[in-house]
Length: 420
Image (cartoon, rainbow, N blue to C red; front, side):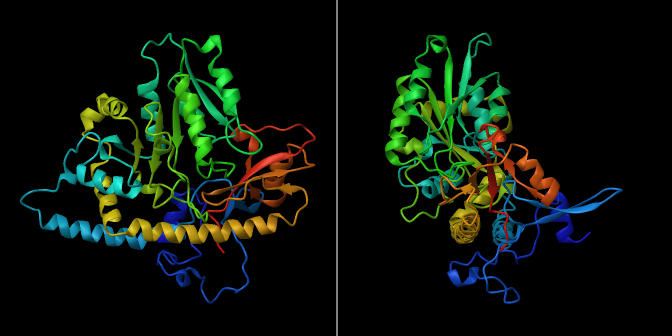
């Protein structure tokens, strides 16, 4: 089995390797052009996987999974990073590097320092806790924020629509998950949320709101600064924790850049938490992220038994990312991703606009996804796409968005996996 076959097998045969690895990683825009063997006309192709049975073989085009194209993984950059690490380690044979030993519970100081600089000038090391990614951060936060008394009520509000796997994390910790509907213009209806939080039935409950404020999954919407502050004030006024999944925050190609992170926008309110990761901006396989929160909450995360036992969540991968940050590999790779994904999303939107039944509520300026309303079709439409055309997309109902039988459907498309 060659390298291409191993990669496809490891990723469930969802992604192809049509483009040279790291072809876009140069800071020069000219380097993002496709191979000369391709047509100069801008077209989009997707990964096709072949499924076989005793009766037939058919090709499937997958726009469902939120995975990057393998051509957009930082293979060459990682080779340089690991080579530098190996040289540094070879000089420390008499005193092994701290990244090979148990680490500091919140994260090794050298990595935290570089991480804080990467996040922004308003980020303080004392407010950071290193995780294995967004899902790990959400799981840990839920564990420390849920009531210690199992008989007490724990309610988590989740945007409607939202990331389809988040709710299971909260339910695993005994939470009741309720929808927080988003307005047609984007963002949670803060007034409706305030009414819900004021309900006598929640007076003795621990409450939490989960939001994706920048380049939202699935809608692509970004909360502006005023909305962020209003939502933070609303939650704080009702003692509700506001947990912001900011995995797409830095993957933003809008002209003005993203608004401040929600934790920073709130004035570092103790009820607000930002959860970040290098998953989408560098590499999913690195499994390195962070929680940015009030010192008291960071201390609660640090005090978790398994963190105390293991000596921090990611000493070695933290060192990998320290080198990646220190050498500028993260920023170079991220700029390449922005160019590539902007090209793909723009081309996808242009093609979709040719169909009068399709509406794009929020044209992406970052992230991975495009959210569509397709009018005049029945809910069976999404299943028919796969059965008749081999096209796999996410049905909006999976993200919590249902429409009437005759009103059409919502679907989510991933443009990050596309070739151009």
